[in-house]
Structure formats: C-alpha cells, structure tokens
Image (cartoon, rainbow, N blue to C red; front, side):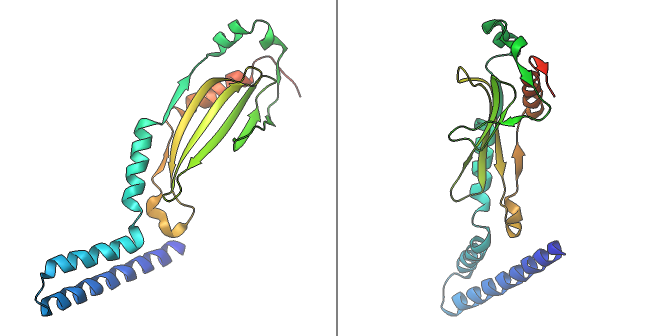
Amino acid sequence: MIALTILFFLVLYLLLSIVVVRLVMRWAGKRGRIRWRWGLFAALVMYNLVFWDLIPTYVVYKYYAHTKAGFWVYKTPEQWKAENPGVAETLTWKDRSGTYEAPGIAYGYSLNERIAETTTYREFPIIPVTIGTDLLIDTQKNEILAKQVCVISGSNNLMRFWNNLGRTSPDRQQFIELSNIYRKLGRKVK
C-alpha cells in the first residue's frame, strides 16, 4: 500500500513538472526568448526540488566503495598465537559475546578475554552515505588484528528510496569467519 502511495505521488509530481515546463516554455515564447533553454531550466529546477541528492549520493558512494571498502588481515590467529605463547590456551569464550565499550565506537563485543570486535560509523552530513569500519583488536596491546570497511548508502526515509544503493562490503563473510576463529581461541565455557 505504501508503494502505491509513493508511486501515486511520483506520477502526480511528474505530471506537475510537465505542466510547469510547458507553462515556462509558453511564457518564454511570448517574451521572444529561447523556449528550449527556458524549458530545460524549468525541468532541471523541478528535478532538483526532489532528486537533488541522487547524483551526489551515487558519486560519493561509488568513490568510497572503490577506494575505501575492503578487508585486511594484519595478523592471523597463528601469528597472534606465536607472539603470545601460551595465552590462547588460557582464554575462554561463550556462544553469546559480552559487550565491549571504548570511546568512539558504536558497538563492541568481547570475543574472549583478549580479543574484541568493534564497529564504528562515519556518516556524511548532507548525503545518505555511511562508512562502517569493523575491527578485530587485541584489547591488551591495543593492536588491530583485522579490519573490514563497508560503504552503505540509503536513507531511513521511505520517500527517498532512490538513495538506497545498498551495502558494499567485500569479503564480509571472511571477516565473520576470522572473527569466529579468534573468538574460539581457548576453551568454551557455559
């Protein structure tokens, strides 16, 4: 039902835009001005009243998706175990992770006593593009073990559905698998 309402208003706005462009072109013709230029100008104004953020959102989303999004492993679990001999055997983990809190993070989960997964978001002020960064960190050494950056485009406003370009998160599954490997270091407790 909501989709029909949105479609109705978009069609209504399209018809209104056509009427406005025709009226402006008629006005320009009566005044001896170039009709198509004034019609194009009126069409651009009508377009930008509603869709002003479509092109900037698309450009920013594609730029950051190609330049920032990705998955990086700075230290494998085997390298971490080699640098911290005997520590992995003393760690415990649960099926449900506890929360981890630190300044500047949106969400944090303690995977075990030494490893945490954190998430931060950077939102752009005008256009609906967000850069999300997930980190696996060694909380004792404050060292980043792995990082995954995703670019999210979209508005919570249903009326601006054209900005929902999706989520670019390359290798998201690999990050989740690596997080599970780090979480399961040591022994499971109930």
